[in-house]
Image (cartoon, rainbow, N blue to C red; front, side, top):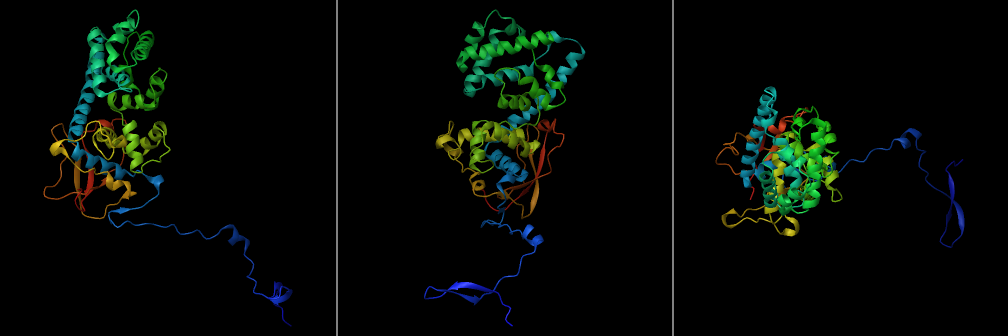
Amino acid sequence: MDNKPKAKVRTSCGRRQLADVEVPPPVSPSVAAHPKPKKPKTTLSTDSSFVSTSSKSRPAPEECLYATHVLAQIHPDIIDTNNQRREALAQGKMQHLIKSENKKQSTLETPVTDAIISTMLSQNTTDANQRKAFANLKKEFPGGWNDVANDVDTTRIETAIRVAGLAKIRAARIQGMLKTVQQERNDANFEYLQFYDSDEEIQKELSRFKGMGPKTISCVLLFALGRPDFPVDTHVLRITKQIGWIGASHSRESAYEYLNERVPNECKMDLHCLLVTHGKQCYNCAANGKPQFPPKGDEQWKCPLIRMKSRKCIVADSVGSILDIVGSSSNKIKTEKGVDEQSTVKSEGSNAEGRDTAMQPSIKAEVVRSGNLT
């Protein structure tokens, strides 16, 4: 007897009749619950030194060190300046300790307070105007920050910093925060922040003052205190979006939270400064293709970040050598001579504790050469 299952099918004349059909075997419940996963596609570029990965994994440490290296070749003065910063930060902390032990509070220098006020003046203005406003303020109040806190009103402060713009708002915020600290600690300075154990404590302390947003506090952590932090300003935000490190919908705040976790501690200061400078000078990376300070004459160069826009990750696949990206104040970038570089950099790992990494005298990275950058 034929036990094949039958089903109604439509014939050519439109009538339905029973016919033999092939019925697939029933699916096991365990198989249905756990379907076979699809194999992810991997797209290889024509350049063997790059391979596509998920955008969620960007930027890889190798990409950050690569960007630092290639940008430092174009802007070596940034590395020199940062080496001087690191040296000054180390010396400043030691001088403060010595003077504090000798109880010469009246003669203390205030590099942290200077940096905080200077950073506040840098908001929404040019570097030149910020420097002029800060110099005017120091000249107007030679007695120091206690004099600023004790001034009858903000008129003199406003006059001194007017060149930076928003003088009334800035003056009220500067005097207000100095007065608060003076009342709490009997001295109008923020040098005590040097001895806070964690970055979170510093962020909490500074965030209670008006005008101290995430980017300003990040700059204070990095430049005033030498802590490894990665501020995200308009240039850093724009360029990291262009090269695919973050999505187009990121704000400065969300970009900071994301990038600060992914950029290796050892290159945070240099990479931040290099991206800011590059964003002001490069036709390819400037806002609307109009750099503030375009390269002139013999300084014309091709943007090395163009290669990173269409590639997801840099993968080492050739012979490497050791590169000192950051050295002493007299040491720029040391590479082996006679080799054109298209550098792929392997990080030796971020400092897990990370407190003083921004002040380390050198960064070691492995550079893989596979062609010419330009």
